[in-house]
Amino acid sequence: MAKKKKTSSKKTNKSKIKTNRQILEEIIRVDHAGEYGATKIYDGQIAIFGKDSKIGKTIQHMADQEQEHIDKFNDLIIEHKVRPTALLPVWNIAGFALGASTALIGEKAAMACTVAVEKVIGEHYQEQLELLEDDHKELKKTISKFRDDELEHHDIGIEHDAENAPGYRIMTKFIELGCKTAIAISKKV
Image 1 (cartoon, rainbow, N blue to C red):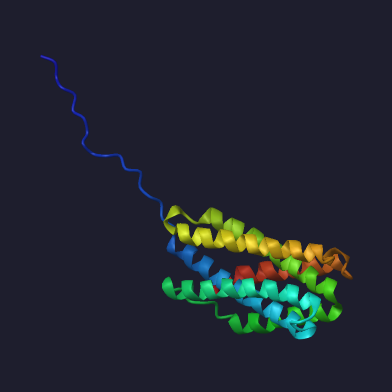
Image 2 (cartoon, rainbow, N blue to C red; image 1 turned 180 degrees about the horizontal axis):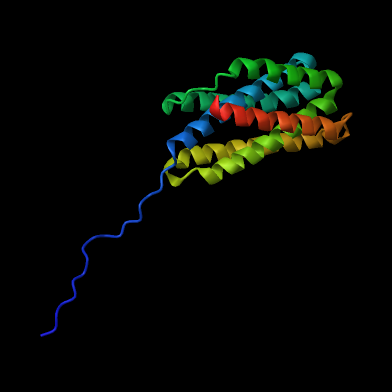
C-alpha cells in the first residue's frame, strides 16, 4: 500500500514588509522641515517682489503649492506622532533670508534659487519613494505628487531664465549644498 503524501495545510503567505518606524519618522520630519523652509523662501521673495508683480504672481503660484505641502505634513506629523525638527526657527530665518537675498539680486537669481532648491527636493522625494514600503501607499502617493510639484517649480525657474542669473553655477551649487545639509540635519535633530 502506497503512503499518501501529506500536503501542508500551512499557507505560504508572503509576509508584508513594513516601513521601519525610524525611517518613517525621518521622512515625515525632514519633509515637514523642507516644506516649511520652502514656504519661507517664497515668503522672502514675495516680500521683495510683491504679490501683484508678474514674477510675484508666478512665485505666489509656487508658494500656494508649498502651503498645500506644509499643511499636509503638519497633519502627518500629528497623525504619526512624529516630533518635528527642533530647527524650525533656524529654517524660518534661513529660508526667508535666502528668498529675500536672491530676490534682491534680481528675478533671475530668485529663479536660480528655485531651480537649486527644487532640484534637490525632487531628488530627495524620489529617494524616499524607494524607501517606503507598501504599508504607506497614501504617503507614497502624496510624496509622488509633491515631487511632481517641486519638479514643476524647477522647470518654472528654468523657463524664467534662471540659468542667466549672475553667478548661476556657484549660487546653485551653494544652495544645493545648503539644502542637502539641511536635509541631513533635519532627519535627526
